[in-house]
Image (cartoon, rainbow, N blue to C red; front, side, top):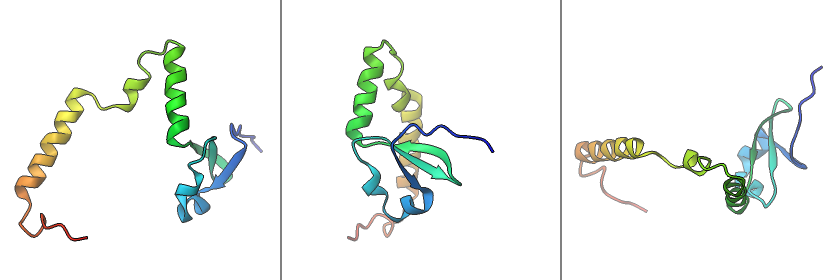
Length: 97
């Protein structure tokens, strides 16, 4: 039987996470378990920002850029959006709340 390191005090199963994901965005990491093994971790926006700042302070200059699309990816996204808008029917463009 192999042991898995869980780097959080709180855990949630995938099943419970699907029921109400917003309740697990708290100010500390929550380990998300799949088949009783850590699949990932959830943190609030505030904690994520703190992690980015801490990484930058440690001199990891490229860390923040990993979470932002590069110029070429932004152009691809814009072109895809323009193409979708061009091919959309009038009915597709009607907003209904």
